[in-house]
Image (cartoon, rainbow, N blue to C red):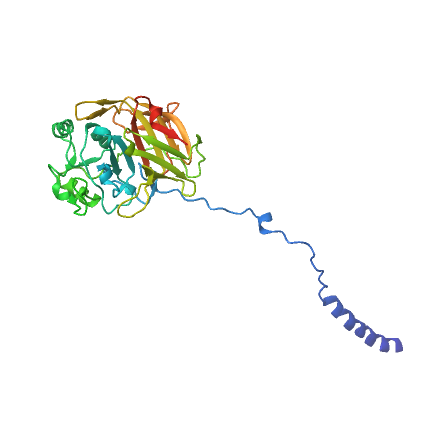
Length: 352
């Protein structure tokens, strides 16, 4: 009786002591381990650049929509009095080739790049320049022509815009420069002139080149500079590689070749030097240039030189090949320099 009387309160008291201890949280043990770096437990995700929807056929540069504008092939004066020129930086492709008397002329092909304010000075055309411009399906833009070139243009009904004979309204003269080194136009006016003469202004089948990825290491031997002598000393051209921009700066007679309007140096991504057979036709020194036979060539890109050949298939553009396989260009502008094969191809080139 007495046991029960005193035991019950004691049991209750003990339970009150035990229950809080049972329900209390365990003491946390400090975590002394070193947390793993995020890089150790999860591979860093590097987004893959999206491929462009379209690329320009002549430069390989990305486009948001396909370019359908027909190319324009402009004959640009390269006499000392015509330098510096305007608009060469906006060309997709530029050829430098001999005209009579040892002077050179530039054939600039415009299609996929941004428009420039003006192009020029514009000069006359020769048969092999017709061939080069038409290989890109271009409308031929010039001011006058040799007798042989006029015969081809008229007899074969070429798509051309000639300031002298059929399209004077689409050109203008710069009064601050002396004639004949002061004739200009721009792509807007030239396309307007082409439409007025009922030439096609769109072309979805322009020949295209193959292109490397920008990070492709490429091939070839180191070569940071090439000097080219066509014939005359005051037409000595050089291209010098800039590893920061991955472009070649163009020099004429040791001076940076600049655009007259922008003051910026003229650059290019790819440089082709190619040898072709030249033949003097008359006492004036007019030439024929064989653009079909193929021959030796050098390709300069990303500070390297590749020795190869140039070929030209029927109804196609000039292409650079090595071991009969076309070598891709890097995306950007390409300058072709056509030198005589006499006395030999290498006599016109100095590589550094």
